[in-house]
Length: 202
Image 1: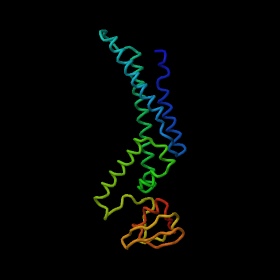
Image 2 (image 1 turned 90 degrees about the horizontal axis):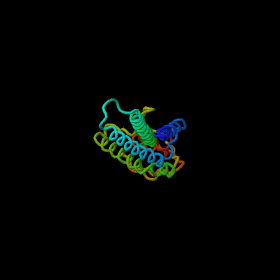
Image 3 (image 1 turned 120 degrees about the vertical axis):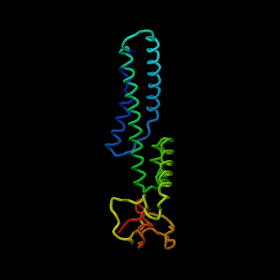
């Protein structure tokens, strides 16, 4: 039991990393090494708890203090792991909506992609798939992917092309958006391009 004082340190490191991420509003690289170390620590603690229970199997009375300390550490480590992953999941969802629900655009960013674990990429794909299924039920009545911070006041919108986005299919036909040019288009047709930064409202 000489190493008991070290248990919980890895969980604290994960929480500190999440805190730094929140303070800087930056998604840091997934700390796979620390997560795996913490999971191994959990397994070691569970084995230790089992061995203590087996040693005291025939004894009656309260459990040994060492067992209570180990169980408390196991529970704390679990909470730290859950908090770390819940924080990252929340940040991923916020980034998804910030990009206007454009998953390919989000995942094409090499800097962001390098900070994600394979499981987080899978999570984003499943999250996107679930939203697309939900959205398909009422596509013509409401676009849940459009921004709600500034509700539109007009059907038409004047935009300037900030980045190359190519030919876009709209209800009135196709439009070839060329960088630097200005257009008057239906807001519903280009809302996602405005959110993603391809077009600027003027």
